[in-house]
Amino acid sequence: MRKVLRWLLALTVFIGTLSTAGAATAAQSEPSDIKDRLLAIPGMSLIEEKPYPGYRYFVLNYTQPIDHRHPDRGTFQQRITVLHKDTSRPTVFYTSGYNVSTTPSRREPTQIVDGNQVSLEYRFFTPSRPAPADWSKLDIWQAASDQHRVFEALEPIYGGHWIATGGSKGGMTATYYERFYPRDMDGVVAYVAPNDVVNDEDSAYDRFFTRVGTKECRDRLNAVQREALVRREPLEQRYAQYAAGNHYTFDTIGGLDKAYEAVVLDYVWGFWQYSLLKDCDSVPANAATASDEDIWNSVDTISGFSAYTDQGLAQYTPYYYQAGTQLGAPTIHFPYIEGKLIRYGYQAPRNYVPRSIPMRFQPWAMRDVDTWVRHHATHMLFVYGQNDPWGAERFRLGAGARDSYVFTAPGMNHGANVAGLVPDQKSLATARILKWAGVSATDVARARPLARFDARLDVRDAEREPASRP
Image 1 (cartoon, rainbow, N blue to C red):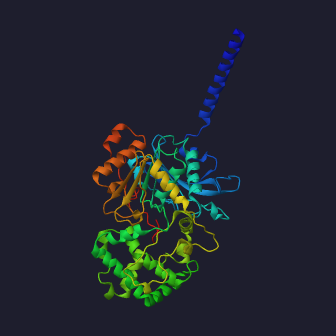
Image 2 (cartoon, rainbow, N blue to C red):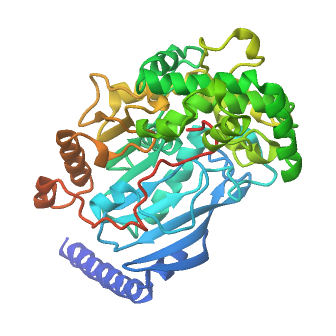
Image 3 (tube, rainbow, N blue to C red):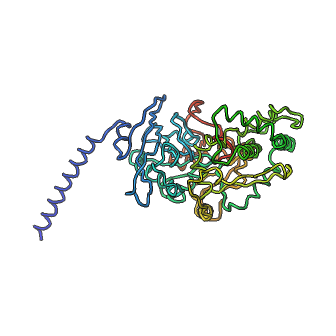
């Protein structure tokens, strides 16, 4: 028996020696520079590094499966960026739900926690698109799984607390990620995230447009929108000249007339999405006596006449595909415009996606997410703008939610943020973000951003997309 014990002791010592030697060797071989550590991740490659004071900023490609359920069936390159401060700091995981910007920027939670920021391009937005593109693999679970793999790849380097964030479609994306992978993040800050639970029931939007802002402003906007349809013939002639001069075509939507009406019907929505009440002064005060030039310029400034051309739609095909298959899309009505002036009404996403791409709507997708948020949301903050149309259908919390909040910034549009909340809510939201990020109790108690505002780095405007996209 003693011989057996001595043999076990000797074996334990031997294994311990090997482990110590192996750890020492690994420590010696592990790269110390953050770029080398990032590039040591299998599937990670460098596109470029850009300097920014106080940070290292990398634009990278990461190899992802086209289908996370069947990773052996092909891969594609997905762009990410890393704004590196220090591996000891918290990390914010950001997505806009669209293309990723390759210019250094810092989202509000990143400034609040003074942390690192990882930003991810949404799958199927070029160049992060498989070739050939199997559009059936563009769904919210596959996109959440992209984020999950990036987190798993980077978490060994950035081992502190993580917070997911995004604005608009990015806020939706952060929410879906939390629904499918609730153990990854320590908190979620979702800005102006629409929640279209029942796609065919959109009366909340109609009610919103009867009370937003002031009656004077609503009347101005409604009158310009109506006048643009009254003057359809001369303004469409100008539109045709504009399109020819810019080599724009209208094959996807089905013609210039349909594109013109779509732009005009976006006008009121687009104003409230991106403008403030004070901006009503820029809207023609008397549409009936305004010149064609004034009507055209007002509609073009707010809605953008290039939005529904083939060239304007192409970049956003992935969004419209998702809107028509899972996310849903609003349908609003125009009681102040005579029916004879409206030929098509608010058009469905199917009209904005090439017919070669098949689409089938899945009504259960948003119901599932909404139910999960109501009953299981933990460490989630939703921020909306009072005057933002997309907030008419929003996420709401149920009895099962824990340490989660829905706040509305008074007077704000699609750019609503924590800084725009009333003081008590601003302090609470800031404190909770800091708490979720795992910073010191003293910093949580102060409830102030840990990093100074940087006008170049800290983006505070609405994440603007052409026309009325979230």
